[in-house]
Image (cartoon, rainbow, N blue to C red; front, side):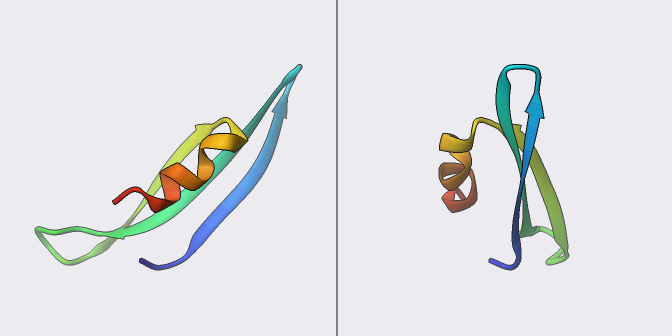
Length: 50
């Protein structure tokens, strides 16, 4: 696994985080970025998931 990035976002009264991880494609072997906006408590689960 390569670089991990997390940014904090605030919209109104909700606090959200945007997590970006770089994953290697099993077909081509190229790296691609996967982005997701979620609650801060779920970020570690997203980054640890393969």
